[in-house]
Length: 270
Length: 244
Image (cartoon, rainbow over all chains, first blue to last red; front, side):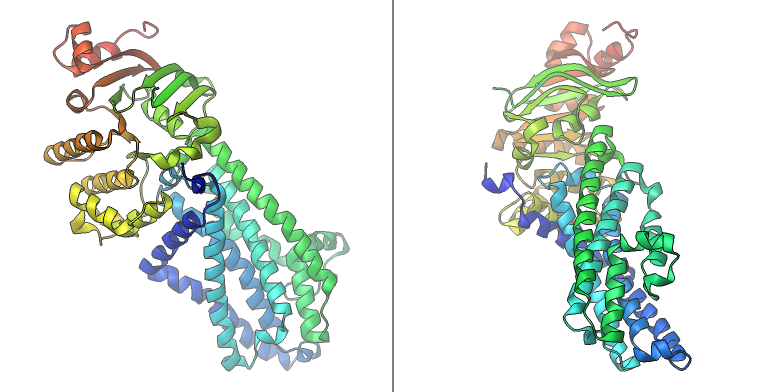
């Protein structure tokens, strides 16, 4: 028995990434979807921003604050969808039974889902970010090195939610599929995407601060409006993300064990 | 040493026993069949052997490894085909086989796919999306996937389902050739009695999750005084409940 059979294998992760890339290659709507929503969101909010600039002194201090928020929010949304929808593809095609009689480990499937989510998010949001430069004379890259921290934190939070959604769908079947769309939007009001957390009622603020996204958007406004990097918020986001990604992974692996107990890996599908 | 060794295996779903106190051994290089009616526990047994399902109790050893503790040590040496699972519909046949070849760590992927395509006569649709294939074509592709890693243990659930008699006969011939060339062990679950009579040297009769009889096709025919395995099957299936 080869040693590689006992351990994590990049080759198997690569095989699964290849599987998702093949899927994109054959599906125009899926490719379009990668670019479409980030671009539409950016265009919509770009015009709203232009309108408000003439009516708001707060926005006038940092004309890109709404656009940056829209683009970063999409990192979270795309990151989550990349994981959830990737996993749903296996269920739609009744492929889980084939995958898990192969040497593929569940955690290797997780790694492949995260990798493809990263690629889809980078391409989708990247194109929208580049479009914003000629359209609105706004470059999200003016956030400087902080952008890397914001992007990574929102992506990891999206992954964590995506894994939790995948776990619920693995446990309860495709009837729970709509969670993929609902989950992120349920968190949007308390993430402080377009307004400071201080705007929220006092009792809701602790909930907001328990989310990495709130710290990211607070940090984003500080950079754009006050040209300040809020390291404490960045560290808080990293710490929370470590917790949430661990919870997401554990839930997914637990759901996998339950599926093995109930026999759903073979029959789950339509 | 048997290639598959099962001891006191049980799988219960609430009050229903899908597999009940099943013990069996399968010798290396044999071609075995699990025969039984709907709900007899054939697919459940295959799923338990593959680790897709965890048993309520009992032990399973495949190729000398404890499948409950170390199934990843042997999954790369086994493979499986079943009408209950599918492959991604939008990927072409070649892409599907390529993905699985990489998952199984197959060397010289293109050559392996080309060899299987020729043997199983799927070369004409390697570039077609899997979802556009007929049921019979899909069965061949699923079999190609199951043979990618040249498995030492091949578990087949209804291996010739959806195939016309000519295609089914060719596939049976190919499977027997494969077994002779590689010395692999084949365990198939089937309702197709003539198929079992033709290819299997060991038949295990399941009923309500229990092993109720076992022997070569000739031994079973003699024991029940019947001319065909189908008649034996009916005798066993129509025994009163609890009369095993």
